[in-house]
Image 1 (tube, rainbow, N blue to C red):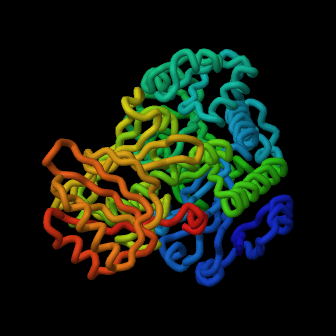
Image 2: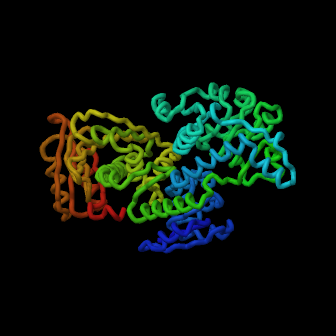
Image 3: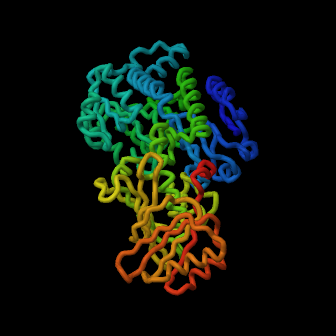
Length: 536
């Protein structure tokens, strides 16, 4: 397997790749756009930093690519939509530089409070100006933290050590959780109006892009100072320029910008009260080693052990959970493959219901696995666990999930209903042990069958002679029956026969069965044998 490293990476990470068995390392930092398109063509994995932009064209050229490792926290340089369409897992390293990022925030806080960069520059220019660089104490000041994730929490911890009073705005944390951190939970407007210093620690997405705009900046406490070492684009930069000019904001410390690098004449860089660093939040020797080692291990875990860690576009699964969920994955994908061959017409809606112990698993993964089985016979090998849900949406298929915690019939089961433009069908599967899973219901008919091999589903009238006809046709064609499961709901109604056969049934024999008296319709199903599963 080829691993392309397209940005500079600490030697510690490169050594891990070099020592791995079955891996070829291609280390080409600072590739041009055209060179990257050529180099990535046969790569199984790609490692980048913030300097390499992975566009839709890159993913289109990368025919073998399975995983991207972003060595760092953000992934703004990766086209996630393109990665999803190609079914490429995108990982980052959110914890390798957490301490370094938090320390840089505190460094910016202190430099902003005491005008350290400005005083240093003046002294180098031969000016001894103590009075013009009068700063403020941090002790006792209100420090507003917007976002209390991993880095935000480390910043809070350090601000408390400086004897600051910490206000926290994070809608995803409870009051108790914020109190345990040592902060006071407040709403955003309350934080803006009370804080002497404000530090941003939220991800950049559609909701947060430019959220600190002119309207919110006008709500800040007069004389407030703002720090952003999180993501460029969180602050409306034009609005911040206006707030600095008016004196509403008296200082800002910025490590990130909406467009990087910013131009030399960027308006924010013209203010003496603005200090800026070139995206240095993770720029420490310790963090670079941590990030490189972390991304190398994540990439190898994915390629060699199918483990997903710190993924941005698919749920992460650790080794113990993956092993525990393996039978559920197998059952879900086989049910998808079954329904793809059983139904007729174009898919319109898929409804999945998970019951019992199955509800303790990440349902997004199980649903994606089912959809992969359902869509592969229609869309081909391009469908995988990453892009299955996206491809379903793009093809107009509505997908819904339901959890039922108390199991009625089976301790752990999956029930699915598929509506097409022609008909509707349902299927249920259940786990019976660590490796034992079976189909237990087809269209409300109780069955019990291992979902593998060549199967025939026969819907027929429940009357004497029909089954004999079907068995006779198969016998005449030399097709051996390995399993026969018959189910009905009432006498002289309709029934379903699930028949296992040793060899595929020819179209001619299927036509004979379909035309037999009393047979309503027949559907052939082919599922991989259990020994073939690892090759799927």
